[in-house]
Image (cartoon, rainbow over all chains, first blue to last red; front, side, top):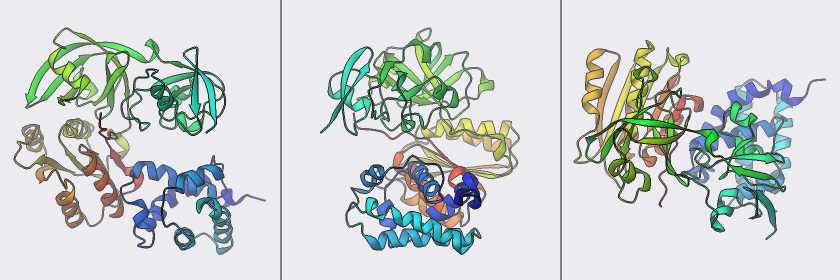
Length: 119
Length: 317
């Protein structure tokens, strides 16, 4: 029985997804303003770490990191997390990932919702 | 706030939760040389001699550096009582100044004789004393035989003023590096290159363009040279000469206003390059131009891995 991360294609899948996903995020009016003025190269690394986590791969993310990383974003609420999860699903659809695996990725993303929203 | 006691250079040092080794040291008047404080320039390189190295402190280091337990003090946020020592001679080398010439107003061409390997577009840190170093991009190709850097004199710049005024031909200076990943690689050969910069950032881009042509680059090279309104474009005659040697390269000047430097060039890129899919982009110079163009080029289809930029953010002193 292969793991989610293996089925998605491991690190190669993260590399393939990061451009598509981050471009969706930056052009999504609901959330793009949170990324104004951030350093792209630094953000790209963070996006890769995030995708590795939600793809079920090895990662060093802790709840504490996620809280600290989002604490400065005023006005961040459930609707923004919903938008991110939606963009994630759209990315995986473009890459031809089956719906059952997309649901599993969305479940992992939703499992850190409270950390991201600091509650 | 919880604080942790670690050993730095054999002495105890208190670090607050979430604080970097560099910030803790500077707060307590312990000197650690530093420059960018963003995990890029490697000026604050240290070595962990006991305890585990947090991965974040090694993220931008080479596999060789990681193996030696090197870490960046500005990114090192210890959670356990580790032991760290400053990196002395082992990461440094010395080089003789064999060229020292003003090539434009306030811009010094510094040529250094060294046995270190490098790529045009990488950077080398030059040490004024054991606590003060600044990174400079390398303009020359390795085939040229000498490391050449273009040093802009800043009125408050400790290292740039020293290099301009006190260092001269025959001086021996201390270097660390070269490092950095903003350089031409043979795997880019089939792609078109979009090269945009300003100020002394154009020096590194000139080296990158020469390297690409020397490696028989197949695609086109489109160069945009940013110049502050009313100033003469530095290195433009060199780019013009390069343009005369091949049809592949087109160089043009754009003017920018200091209050909104990226406005005009971002619009130009949007208009002239509707799809940057499969292009390689090189960006060096004003941080505002670099950051804004990183985003613009990415949104127009360039892959994150194909956008290479000069990583230095000028920090207020």
